[in-house]
Length: 468
Ligand SMILES: Cc1cc2nc3c(=O)[nH]c(=O)nc-3n(C[C@H](O)[C@H](O)[C@H](O)COP(=O)(O)OP(=O)(O)OC[C@H]3O[C@@H](n4cnc5c(N)ncnc54)[C@H](O)[C@@H]3O)c2cc1C
Image (cartoon, rainbow, N blue to C red; front, side, top):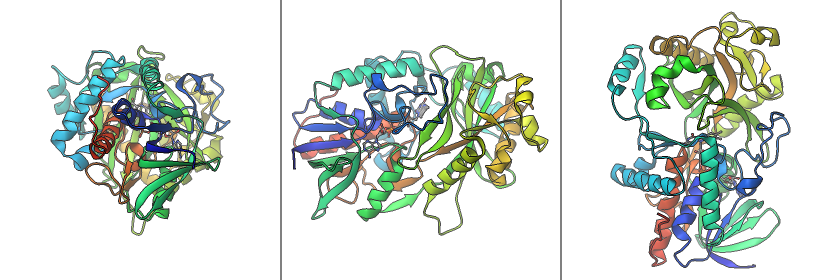
């Protein structure tokens, strides 16, 4: 075995980065490993407009220094109510303290001072949402935009590079355990790297790998509900009533037909709809959205996700989500786009109909088609019902011109059994971030990395060395 590190961190997304920031000056030997590239070398074909049909391996959009955060819209949701289950694990008070601490670090590395989701007008919006049958959860939010998010993460990379070992382009294949304690990890090149502590932070991209390793190591896993839906694109003006004050509006609804929980997610005013490839060694193409510091389009896009639980036994949420995404991929070569008017009239969208549409699709590589061939009736029905409810709050959202892209799936659907310090059932193996089912966004992913790092410092008799 080449070298024994005090700590190995798998995944250089926000969870891995914030664990690294906490550990890097404490006098421990730390290695941060990621299968993707350094942040400046991450070039996504989506950005160069050639689409996502090439299936880069690993996908530059979600892998490499910065993780899925690198091309994200950089909406920092500063609340324990959304973005993960940290408060369930560490308690509400501690989760709030951690979120404030994470915010100070993002500010130090370049996040802007402006905060949305506070101030006048919010109570009125909540009342109007309620009378449309929706619940609006106002959330304090800082918005970086894709450009600044990239720059902030680059500053973190520059800060960390001289302070710990970083190995990019390296995939961790397996975990070795001896007598109930972590011993080493093995890379895809067959190299064994010894460690006293291991933090697993592989994100949604690595969630399936983590599940497989967890099964091999006999760790308990619970299935989360599966979140499946569409990306919606409407004129920016239609949503301005909400986005001006809130930037991102978290709306929730229970579908009349199925009583399923339906919610808006990841709102990008002036942003673009994009494709991403996700799912490790057996990837699928799914849809997502990004926003910028300043509007790049005249549209706003957001996801509508439906959370369902299934008849028992059901143990394969990730396989199920990938199966649905693959149906859309088979039909379109990637992503399907359909006008709401065409969906309601029971016909496919065509290039000709899209050309005359008032909402111009920002994802040029999407194929006009019929989403009902890919999405089960239950999901489509719930999405349409949610759009109709939203139309009462923000008229125009359920216009025939509204675009639906499919499909969007969130692969954080299995959760590891963890202690309040995020240790797994194996001593000295910790798990953090989206891949372990702890978080669903940048802030709680970052905070969870800190929780694991602080426990390692405590057990090593070291002080944390905050990068603030
Ligand atoms: C387009 C887009 C926009 C988004 N916008 C927002 C937003 O505005 N606000 C928000 O809060 N959230 C947003 N998110 C979600 C946010 O990016 C994630 O919640 C967050 O990045 C999760 O952090 P993480 O550290 O858990 O995992 P990730 O950021 O996914 O990082 C995991 C890393 O682990 C690496 N990895 C996986 N498996 C292995 C392995 N076996 N060996 C080595 N390396 C491995 C991956 O390459 C990856 O770099 C967005 C996501 C996307 C894709």
